[in-house]
Image 1 (tube, helix red, strand yellow):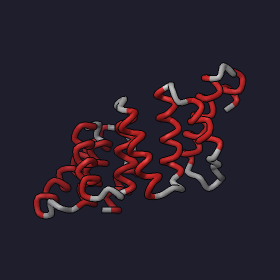
Image 2 (cartoon, rainbow, N blue to C red; image 1 turned 45 degrees about the horizontal axis):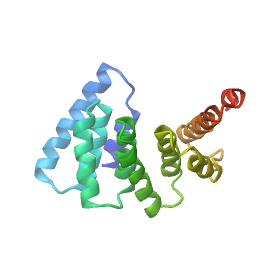
Image 3 (tube, rainbow, N blue to C red; image 1 turned 90 degrees about the vertical axis):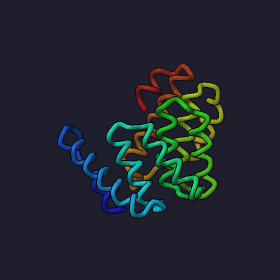
Length: 168
C-alpha cells in the first residue's frame, strides 16, 4: 500500500498521469474485491480517487477507513483537507481536532485547523493564538511552511495590515 501511495504522489499532472492513476484505481478495485476489509487499500484508493479529481468517491473511501479506524491519522488528514476544499469547514475542523487528539504534535493538523478557522472568518483570535504556538523549522516540509506563511499573511490581511501581509 505504501508503494502505491508513493507512486500516486510521484506522478506528474497530465493525461498520462491520469491514465496511470486510473489503472491504479482499477487494480485497487480488483484487489479490494478479494480483500474488502483492507483499511490500507481503501485508504490508498481514496487518495487515488482524490488525485483523479473524484472527490465524492474519495470521500466515501476515506470515511469508510475512519469508520473502521478512528485513529488512522493519514485518512483523517486527507478527509479534513477534502472537506475544507469542499467548504465543509466545521467537519474539517472536527477531523483536524481528532488528529490533534491522537497526535498533538501534528503540524499538518495544527496548520489545517488554523486555516479552517481563517476560512470560517469568525475565529481570527483563536487562529492567531494557534498560529503563535506553531514554529516550523528548516526540516518542516515545504508545503507546511507554505501553509504557515499563508496563515500569517491571511491574519495580517484580516487585521488590515497589508504591508505585513505582503511580507509574509
